Length: 275
Image (cartoon, rainbow, N blue to C red; front, side, top):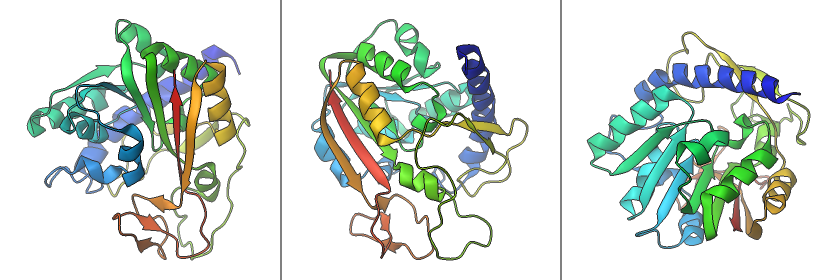
């Protein structure tokens, strides 16, 4: 597939995320009608891996409403969020302002981040939890990240495991408790067209642009792209916990997240790589 075709599909995704934004703002999923608790979206091991963020420059790529970006600011980081949806960036700015958080949000495609941020470099670039599947070219992504990092800077990816995507991140209507493989585990098969009328939240249907395109990326592809870009992989974690109960038989853990009682399978992974 050509870069022009990639750009066309990403523009369709951008329109879909613009249309998703008011739905997500009204949803209970993000808890925006309550006291904000942005740290609920982080596994405990993430803070262990990230370390002390006070006084550090942290960039959150594909930040959407910026709920996770706020957690970095609250831990003392100079936080910047970037997203290609103008509606999301406007909403994130409003959420941060109401929360009294000093966060800068920038509207740009990930691949244009270096130019959009005027060549600024960061101590930490963070991304994940449903972000990489919207990028067609991981080698280009990793090269961009390498340019965004200072020497010694950390790329930290926390993403849904490819096995979760193969099972389907959202139950099908009428689904029972069985775990069923619905999609390819391995990536590289080209874009998957999805109907984005209904999102992962409890909000109403999306109005307008409902076409959505995703690319499946295996862990090997993410690691290899990072290494090709000159980054040194320091750690790869896998965990069987999710921040929401994907299956009805999921049980709450001590961390407040959810896991399957059995079988224990990886549902999320964390990758640390250093420039």
